[in-house]
Length: 121
Image (cartoon, rainbow, N blue to C red):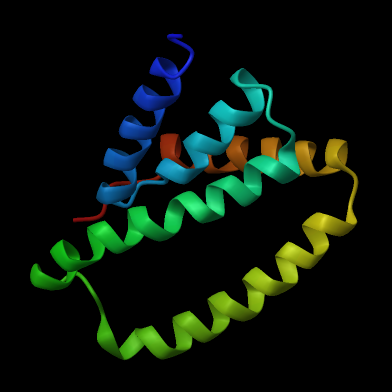
């Protein structure tokens, strides 16, 4: 009966992080694949669906505070759509184990960059 409590907590925590714009979806993906036993391809699909309402809920606050560079929207959206479609095609074409390794390498690289990045003034 209580098997919904941990996913509820993880969903709430990643929602807060998504609202801050710091990669809550990535952490949700790690939780689903490493701790909840969800297969990588399925976890990616769930993560994409999760991000839509989470991003839409955070967007008005970011617009209100002037954190949206409107001149960058069209190029960024265009590039994002094209690359997302290409990456989705590649992700569904490669084996799950290879995909997991690529994702793990990505997480390590991002983590190292965060540790050693100089603070911008």
